[in-house]
Image (cartoon, rainbow, N blue to C red; front, side, top):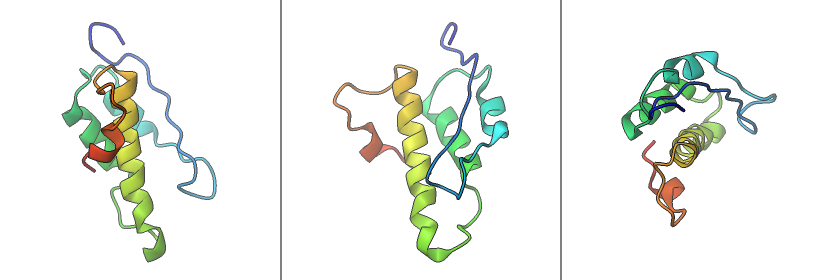
Length: 91
């Protein structure tokens, strides 16, 4: 980060699909943005925009979005120090 702007992003997600999941568009969308909850929510929507391929795995979409938002908040210094962001992150 430079001056509160995201300058570099490399994302990969495990346990979501049979192989690590990467979505380059999400990283590209974040580059140049000022770190904020709104930016992270918009990026999270790009991670899992469609219904899950199987109804039994629908929970993974919410888990992925919440974990992404909480992790980005922590990495950019927006997270609170109590460690409860993951529970409060809006997906």
